Image (cartoon, rainbow, N blue to C red; front, side, top):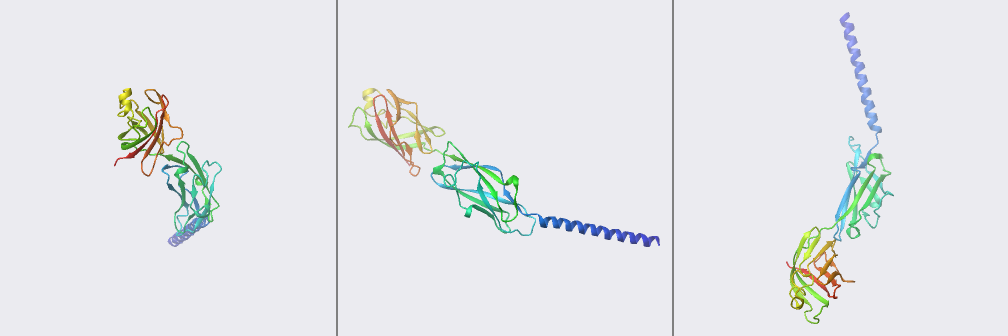
Length: 286
């Protein structure tokens, strides 16, 4: 009789335990069934660095399905993209959306979607970065995770300069003491890199001071008009440079630039001492 009662008690306990487990499973399944899908950015901030070369470049920003991956399938989830008022980057100027209707979609059974922006590097100011603050809003299904609702993107321009090498330089003179002779003059000159974007040319006059009539008349030489100049995003600038008689500055109204397609450098110079000036065109020698 005691054994029979003990067996009955064990069976009752097993039934009670099974019932509790079933209740727990139903409770967990019920919790998952009512948990919404949650989306958000994969990071809260990032730098977007673009080489400033005149091209239109693409920036991709992922949006993740954070919660809902435990389900066998997920629906299409579309969220609006809002440019926050704290942004200094201006749509249509500093960037453009390629996503339709300024939205992002995580497609059915996918765990992320992609925001795609285009940036026209002609509009990037390398001295002043812009900040784009994007916010996710109004998803078609589920919620946006508050801690991953916003991303701050710093749009940074980077100019890469690589002008060092040999050039055939043709200089057309606007004024020197021996015109109309020695005009124009062509000679080979090496552009030497002396730092990041900083270059040196041994005779900025295109030959007038090193091998032209000034060498015989005024005892000038190869280093009498050595100049250092900077290349900043294909713009040539310099300051504090001199010939033997005074400061030499960019010619007013002249071209001082690099052609990004051909690599040809145009430098327009003016010497304040006696007015020597010219336009020197540097063509790379392959």
